[in-house]
Image 1 (cartoon, rainbow, N blue to C red):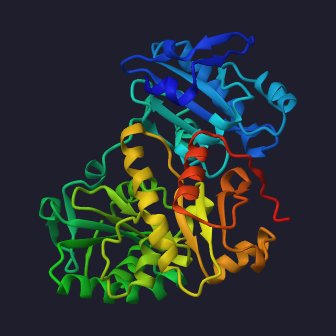
Image 2 (image 1 turned 90 degrees about the vertical axis):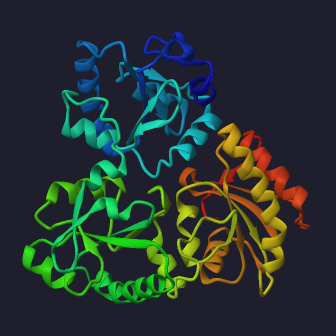
Length: 415
């Protein structure tokens, strides 16, 4: 049962009684996972609002189709107990730290408070921006705010450079890329000419792809001036609701942002900007994820967002290390497709400046290399394998122990 695999067999309620997780499974039932902590000011501000939302829905017709589970990031059990006393819903027992970490990783919790609503039958997320939805719809009139498909938001008509209509149907079967940008943004104006060159080179090779500009400009005049420099399609400036919904759909928190979709319009990468900078010829477009990557500026985003297994080496090149790690990474990724386990990213750290800074932060000296480590920056912890000889068997063993929650982590304090 997917939900039991996620949360375990038992939760606790506000009176301290154990509750069977299986009792919440049902067609159409929704469970909110509330990642929060007493030490977090924004959490303490949001919890009363969530309490009002919860009590409102529990008095209405939706009372039997949803509940909420508190997933604590508190630092000790007393803080958990004191904070949980203010909540009317369920909680994951505080002692389930390993499960809590896996949930944070699975749902890519980058900060708290975070509220994720999941389908109890599948365990899959319905919406990850529950906090924003509760604030904008405190009565839950549109709950459970089921996530729209990209095609629903995209609509049926776009505009081209001449600002005439282009049917969205003409994009079917093509790679579609979303470019979130604005004329007032200096990094955007620097990146746009590079993106145009890359776009033209990719198109010249006959690749079926198109870019859609999603403007963050504040006036129609600025939009027209800026879009006039671009050769691709756009969502009309006047269609602000569609532009905003598109930015929310892809969780755009800063610009420029370049999101690449495959032919079926599923996300390949949301870090397209870095790929363009590192591959301006677009030779590796659409920049499909690799089982193992060299850690550098282009591949560094995941290390701040999810657990990573990193093979640190003092070699001038990392080709041998990548070759050693790749079959292990492929094996675990293939297994994860069937099991649903959350597999960490596999990375090799060589001589890039990011590596030097990271090793300094970890207080790791050159003589300590090579080293195999698991970095879990979102949870502020890391594990260092004691072995000096890095083998495929060691990498496999550490990866499996991570999945089984059988590693002894230390605090990621930088000391």
